[in-house]
Image 1: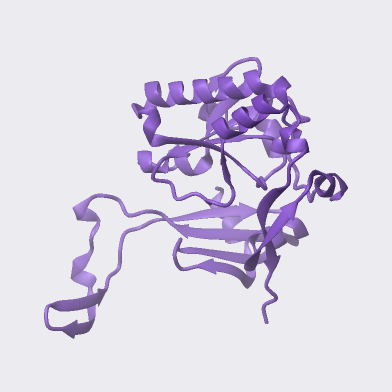
Image 2 (image 1 turned 180 degrees about the vertical axis):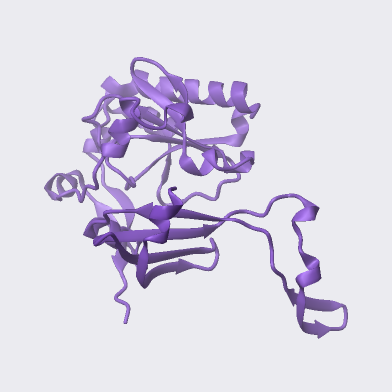
Length: 266
C-alpha cells in the first residue's frame, strides 16, 4: 500500500472490532471520498528473538502466576478501501447474525446487493495479481488469496479458483453442465497444493461459501486447521454429488444462510 495514501486517511468512526481476531475497522475519508481502513494484527513470528521482554511491565502476581504487559514486534496489516460505497460500509460494520431460509423463488426475487467485480475481472484479464496465479487452463484459474500471499505459514493456506465464465454468480446457478469444471477445479487445486506446497489432500478443505462474499462463483482451498464458518462452508464434493443426483438441485431446494443485521452505534 502506498504509505503516502495511507497517511491521508482521516478516521471519523470505529465501525467494527473483534478482540478474538485482533481486528479494528475504521470509517473515514481520503481526498474527500468515503474510505474504510481495516487494521489486523499479524500472527506472531515463531522466532524467540522477536520478544522484547526487557520492556515488560508486571501488572499481576499470585503464587506461581505472573502477568505482564509486553511490547511485541508484531506487524499490523492495513487494508484500505476507497472509494467505499454504502454496501462496503454495511458489510464491514458491527452486526448481529440471523438465520434465513431461502427458497429459489426468494433468491430470484431478491435484488443481489452487488459490489463491483472490477477487481475480479482484472485478475481474469491478467491486469492484476498475475504473480499470484498458480494454475490456469481454458476454463478457470487458481490464485493465492491475499492473506496467504503475505504469510509464510501453511496454516494460512488459502487459494481461490475463479472460472472465466462470468454468468455463474453463485452455487444457485450450477447444474450438470458445470460438473466437469467443478471436478477439474477440485483435482487441479489439490494437485497444485501437493506439488507446490507439499501438503497432502487430507489436510486441505475445498468448499464454496453461501452466501458468497462476492457474486462471481469461486471455490476456496484452505488448510484443514482453518476455522472457517460452519454454517456457510459447503464442501465442493457435496455440491458435485448433489448436481449429479439432480441437475437443478440448487434451483429446487431451500438453503439456509446467516444474514447480518447492522447494529446501530451511538
